Image 1 (cartoon, rainbow, N blue to C red):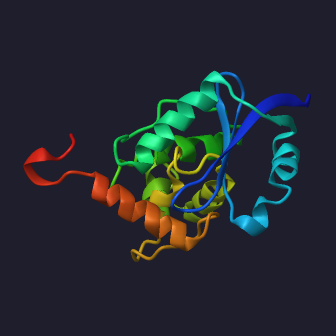
Image 2 (image 1 turned 180 degrees about the vertical axis):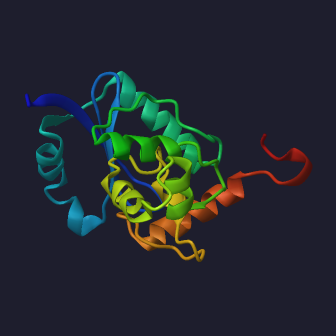
Length: 179
């Protein structure tokens, strides 16, 4: 596979530093970091994506930046930046189903398995969630244990909890609920 060229930018957020990588047109990765993991993060991401990453900007990075800023401010309910993700056919089905989970809602791994027509594949669904390189945009944080517990999140359970609370606060209820 040929190495690609990507642009990257750091974002300081209430849930710590986030690194985003894009081509000119598509978002490739979003990573959560803390100060310890921030060191050498670009070179690790280059190896993961088989890419040469440079600090800089692109149309997709500017779009993600605006949408993510609006999301954190409680003004954006969905992301429209084009996504580039590689994975197995199964993983892609899981990631597509995750994008159907509405803001302020959660589902279990079993719910997702049933949604993609693989009712016994809840462990494989959890593995596909773990392989998601575009968290928040592909909202794997909305997937919880069947007993309602917060389980597995690459960014840390405290970030998952923060994201779910933030989205819960963003979602109007009652007469003014989103359709």
